[in-house]
Image: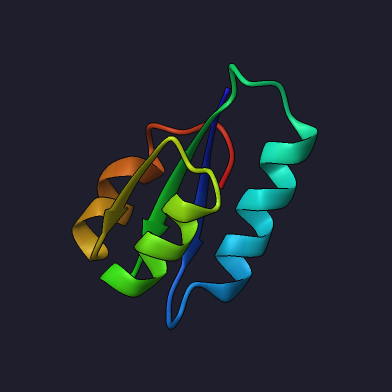
Length: 69
């Protein structure tokens, strides 16, 4: 399963959601952190996302490639 966590601003909510998902889901679940800016992306990545990207294009690109947003 592939999950995308999208956040903007400082990435606080995305960071908390990613940490909660990582604690509750098996390790084979991929979590992609998508931030509207680099600060949000970095916060999600530090919380345990497998991969991360920033910007509008990254969000549009990944939207059709994940199972859950």
